[in-house]
Length: 213
Image (cartoon, rainbow, N blue to C red; front, side, top):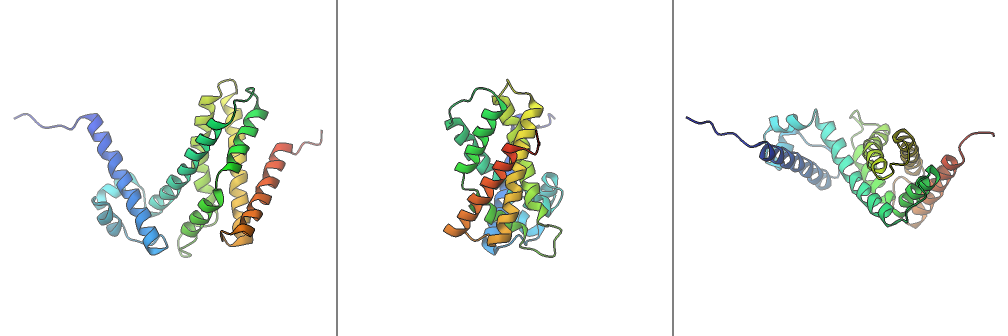
């Protein structure tokens, strides 16, 4: 009797659908409960997959939560992509690329995203998640941005692009931590002014560098 097999494309589509269902379920549970506290069984039931399927895609619940946060930050990456596309093309230099990236960062509503991420990552004081977890989320997004920006800027060495993007994004991660410490992650006019001030200082420091020459 001939065995029935699933075509590779169909299998890949099914895996992607399961992964998204798990992340959607995690996001739904977080928003309902106001914190990332749920079991693997609860997550699997909400996603309509088996417990084994969850662990086929993610190493742990922390991995699910971090990936959920990263996916939210990827929405910002998409906004970043749209902002850079709308920016007039530069002259192909690192200076022009820096201006393009920082203009896009300023145009995005990062405080709203950072406040949500912080609320998720700091919600469980007994977990292994720490303030550094926010930086970890930015690191994941930085890797994706570096590749995409390098693909659009063939005149600039990939290493230079990666260094520039990581410098800006790490600066944003540092700004996020200081902003949380000063405002508690509240979203109002005064906290947004603090954000803008901190971001301006970070961009200014990165632009100027630390050379005495």
